[in-house]
Length: 241
Image (cartoon, rainbow, N blue to C red; front, side, top):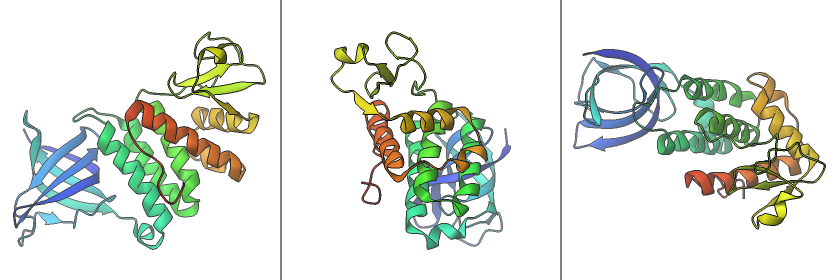
């Protein structure tokens, strides 16, 4: 069977002297790993450099083995502004890294594919840190580990003014239930409102949010803790620490 799809380059590794192995997140097949034999030799079938973060059209042969043969690849879209902005390059790198690390092979997820598309579309005109937490809030929802930001994760009751977050439990904890947890962190009303807005709205509405710097830092710290606990993924780096 032969198939055609489009996908974003998540990872690339040179194989021997002439070939390339790539991990691609595709629209129809989800994450796949493929080999482009003779990629570094003159071949008219490969008209793309297969750079990280680019969108490409590929023709391949799905099979039961983990590495599929890619017989054709053509560049669809590139994002040159990333090479001019280290913070945006860092942010997009983190986004693509979590997709590569967390998403299983061949698990179709059109919402994650669209999220990558929309994030790359809007990050050019917005701050890197904003797009970073927008992406991760939406990604956690789309990959099935959505944090609970509306009810107490333990008693499922509406929350009062005093609101806490438990990374281990994966959501908000009320003032009464917090006594039973040692890992809770207090959150301000602005942080809670921002998190709920980000979960409930899609592009382009989410990029209109304008939280304070302290609120953004709190959201990023919360995400860093949550990702480390549930996905064993480290978000923070020198740029955002």
